Amino acid sequence: MKILDVVKTSCKDCHRCLRSCEVGAIGFDEQAWIIEDKCIYCGTCMSVCPQNSKKPYDMKEKLMEYIEGDQKVIVSLAPSYLTAYPEIEWFNIIGTLRKLGVDIITETAQAAELVAAKFNEMIGGREKTLLSSCCPSIINLIEKHYPEMRDYVADIVSPMNLHASLLKEKYGENSKVVFIGPCIAKMDEISNDRTDSKVDSVITFNQFKTLCEEMEINPKEYSDYKIDEGCGKIGGTYPLEKGAVKASDLLKEYNDTEILSANGVKSCKKILEDLKKEKLTPRFIELMACEGGCINGPGIESYDSTVSKEIKVNRYADQKEVKYNSDDIVQYMNKISIDRDYKNRQKIYEEPSEEELRAILKDIGKEKPEDETNCGGCGYDSCREKAVAVYHGLAQKNMCIPFMKSKAESLSHIIVESSHNAIIVVDKNMVIQEINPVANEMFGDEDSTWNGKELSQFIDPKLFKQVWSSKESIVHEKVEYDEYKLITEQTIFPIEEYGVIVGIFSDITQREQQKKRVQEMKELAAEKAEDVVHQQMKIVQEIAGLLGETTVETKTALHELTQLMQEEK
Image (cartoon, rainbow, N blue to C red; front, side, top):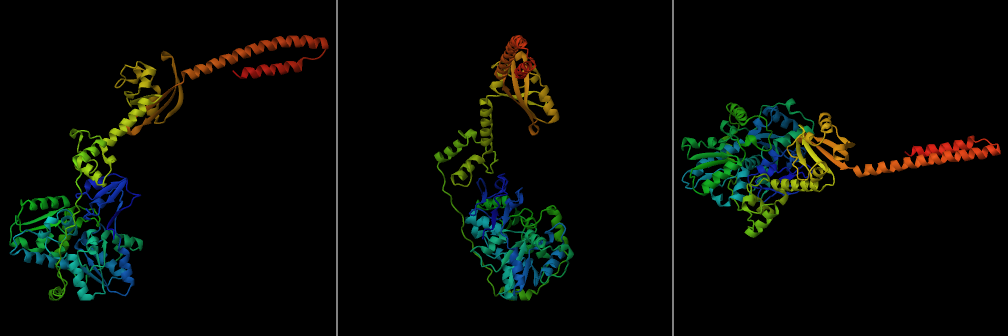
């Protein structure tokens, strides 16, 4: 199962996903692609992509397959469903699931409360800091990028997997459990070889909405306020920042310096770095990959501020009451395994030598260390980091924006400089911005400086002004300059986005002079022909008179010949 993929036809090579990825899991080969060895499936690349080219695996059809089958279908709703959509309320979601034919609707936060209680138990007597195990992206972050920190993580399954195990224990192994939530990393969690997940499929809230649209179902037309198995107030706030801390009730026993919380991959990485260096030694740290918590996951609509969503969740949670028998839960908990372990899945890439790095840097115009601007435009923090990615085949040399800009400008300059035509570029105020050597030679002194001067100092800017005013190009216009003894053919066009007008001048002086000489020769030939005709007519008239014949036909024929020659002028 490929959890996250890139639609090649949509990716426009903007590098925004790479610049936003905190773990460098985006590779480029003409277009973006996902580096599976590094990806933690946080979904940031999905959220920032302007072309919407990143697509998670789609399992929504499985829900309908299960409903149409004979199995009991159970939906485990992530607690962030309260803020899933801007215009669809939580009771519309419940009503729509009933409409579709789901047998049992439950809240995942049931299990979140149990996991939080386990955290509280684990802290007691533990010397090493305990890290929460709820967020699958954080687990991926640790296994793929900080494997040395695995012993810090609570060895208990996530709320989603615990909930699925409890549901199947209660309703039968043949029942189908579908998790609907804001997270795409949950798809990886149920498909990897590190957990014995009882979840049959994972659907994001966005995918669920798409399913409704495909089936022409309007969720706002359906309402149901009854959830078969709900959670209590504490579980209801689990998707918020410090949700696990509050649910664990840890702050009653420990102070704020001993119980910490961080959200967002960047912040979590810094926490792990500090923890590794023993700059931090708290009792417990809750880590969440999404900034603001699960209510801002990649599979949920982004509309209101985090604070607005928090208010919505807290307001609803205040009204909640536990909708399950705690004794039953204990009974089922004793029948299932809640333990989990973690693997070192970090891929070690060979380090290139300094000579190999310098060769790559040289190819992108970084001849010396001071040429390394480290602008970050390519998505990497430094030129050397980008060169390492090129060495490993994860990036391309032409991703360097300053280098490609310089190369494009150099190529453009070469084309302009080597053109056989004169090229003049002016701004809308008719001040010269660029001029090539041919124009310099054509209109003035090769050593004279035109840039920054007004065009009127050299030629009449009338046509340039006309083009800028009308925003319409002039093509192949013949213009004579007596002062330069020059005849040109001009094409002038505006480039509005840059506020300039470009004039391309072809020197047609010799061509026009040659045409003039040919015309003069034709006119002289016509004059001589007319003279000959006149003399011949006199002779013909004398002969015709002697013969007594009319000269009309002969005169007409000779006159037509003269007219034809005159027309050649």
